[in-house]
Amino acid sequence: MTNLKCSVYSCTHHKDDHCCKPNIKVEGPNAMTHTETSCASYAPKGAENAVGTSTPNPQLEIVCSAKECVYNTASRCRANHVAINTMNNGAGCSTFTKK
Image (cartoon, rainbow, N blue to C red; front, side, top):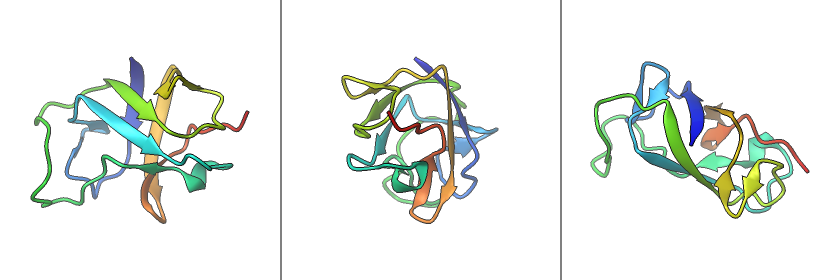
């Protein structure tokens, strides 16, 4: 599991710089830069479809479709530390590093 730090304060799953979900999904199958990724688990505060717990979870499984990221192995993130930050598309993975 990956140590995740999330700074997307507008997400309903955000608490204490972590995520309250047991896992997240990062999208960006054709991403060449971190700005082309997105956190598919992002839900704006107050979203009716928000699912998770109220306990921050620093160790999560991250499913990832960013094929060109060096940390993607069999659609799972293998980075030791991942940062999810606010981006134009809502939230994205700042840890993305092109192969």
